[in-house]
Image (spheres, each protein chain N blue to C red):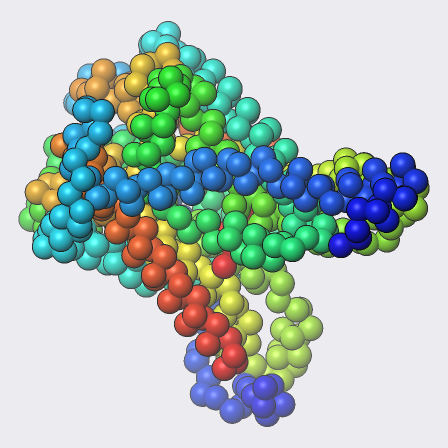
Length: 288
Length: 308
């Protein structure tokens, strides 16, 4: 407080401004190289022939571009994994949006006895490590007859995404002006009509954030998919890599072609929806 | 609240609205609460129940052994070593990832065209699944074909070339480095969000006062970002305690348990050794550790807040 009034620049010893700035820039440049080199390695190597990966230096550009690994991987059944990912993640996101929007509306605007403790409890669920649920969910899935079906993943995916989604949407809905709600009430709307006609449509940006934040996480989810499914025809994209790993153990370019292909959908999505994705990530992480 | 005789006297439409208002919270919360009970709360309690059993998962039910598993856990050096690795991972996340992320955020916090492109590039590792990152770095760190060792040999630094993931001395460090690679962008975004809420007038006022960028950073921006930094530290510590994917893909906790964390140990115990009971004990202990540290961290940060 006082530091502001007593001119901080004079009250504290100066650090050379140039020094700090160039240090930050140096670090940022180094990190850019550290970030990009592995990715370039993946793309370049995946375009090399298998012989070339052994007889030329790893950092050399491909002598001639060889698409054969991509062709082999695409014919090798990766599209089944893609289809499963689209189905499981798509259905999960729809269910997450419906359930969390409803809950958030109740927690943000309806008055009932256990509102605050219930909200606290749901938010507290964010710290539960999913690993503690793994064995019981595995047993539950087996006894329900859902083991090794894409449906096995939807329950755990939706449930583990709900706490953070409800948290984001409740904060969002609290900021929707009360006047809109009052006007709808005067028009004779009950809580159901108010939710459907006022809160749900006005929560568009919040819903987009929730969809993107969970979408990235679930698209790359590994452990539930690994434990709850076993056959190739029922697994999602992160498992494609895992399964191909055995098949292409010695074929490095093919393996890296799988990496490129499985990562491509999110990178394309990111190229189009950059701003929203970053906003989604930010909102999702502000849960302290 | 209103007695039934009064509500019966209400006109039908008003009574219906009254009923709707009364049951609305139940209706709106039912789907979420049901899902959380079935897939989060029930498994949580069931895990504690399983932790009291000796069970290979094949028979109909396990044998109730009381606290045997918990006593075993207390004397299990693998578990304590794994917990130590988790804590080291948390410490490194805070000490390495957060400063790098902060430096990147400070540099990118100007709305120039160059910084927009850089933001995209820095963000990329966050879009890859942990399996993809694991597979890529297994190749990069490969002692025979990997570019790291190839580069060291090319520079004549043969002595520095190592079996990065296969050598007990380096496996954990290598894995932690890759985890940093993947997660720095996440905290960079968090800090960018914090910096975006920084009032520009403050910056101007400080510049008029001839404050250097360094002074502005340490005296004005850092205090402003305190909440964000605390959130980031909490997230990275809690995340580190329950880390699984990358370590499982890259080393499986090996070699010789050197990169074991609680989650990989739990996974191996259940799905490789088929000890469902003891695996559930490890999982339950993991939950207790996370809850304890999260609770402690929240109290600590709250105390900080009252001081500021």
